[in-house]
Length: 451
Image (cartoon, rainbow, N blue to C red; front, side):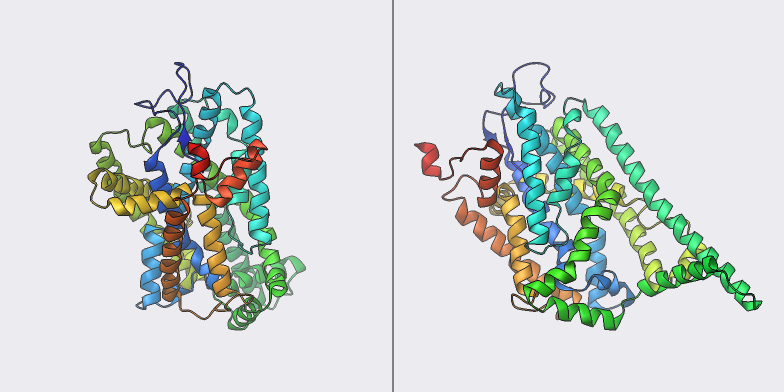
């Protein structure tokens, strides 16, 4: 999450492919700006899980024409997954920055520092999920994914891009396999129903086949009784909330990591590519940013709209969907979110170059410089507002009103960052993480730096 960089002078440096050198110890402000936007944007997709039952994830699709449906459509097409993709790309860029700075300093133990840094991040992720109660934590998953990326640091952009595309393809294949499994459940169910009509006795296996599809149909719609029970638990004390979320926490750090690691690896590798090309450090011609903006939006947004249309079919009529569709809603998910994410970054960099909203760029830069602290601050704000050991508003807001909370938390993030950075070099959690990585207390106050 750091963006301080020092470039080695040697021709074989892993960062030597940047179009222009960056001064020693200079922060790359555009990376902070993009990271700030991505960090704030992540809350757009996280807020429904902070404030409502997991069963209601796609519930707005059941109510076309409503404000909830309109907001859900807007968020899904333009932001859902896209900001996390961008954040993952910046994490990949941060890997190169961190290692490059250590190599430039002549340190022989930069591999040790790299892995120590990630292992501390694993611990932070566990605390974030199991103590602070955020089931959607990404710190743990990012750290585990990044453990595999150290050997890729010296690859050329073209080689990194090939690996990124391979990871995207693997993710797409896994999504399509889930679609084929869904069709298989549907076909076995229809065969079982046909046997029942002939008054034949079903075997235990056939009964399970029937139950498997009935469970699919049941899970496609929220159960009001289960939702009410979940809401009540989440409005209770800390212990009850912990017990309620524990199964989801375990599932998220096991099954989701298994399913989603290709997603994270692909975006991190793509971020390495973009950093080596000079995209994030604002080194490319303005024309290039316009082209990436148009390509990212022109291809990514229509793909996202198609994905949403397929998801709508799954939610509203899973039987018809399984009978008629061979394409999984998530087949092009990683591709479209990468494209739209790059489009968002391109737009922001064009605004940055224009100088039209310098105040906004500064605010985003502050948030991005303290991304770790602000990410956890979002969790503290939301859990204390929604959960029972705080204000107990879980399940009380309609879907679209959750985004009023997002706006308030954004303001808190920006104000907190601006005030904190007036006095300190790092965010509070960044400072702790840095001190643990080097196993030495780091200077924090700006006065200490000047002294």
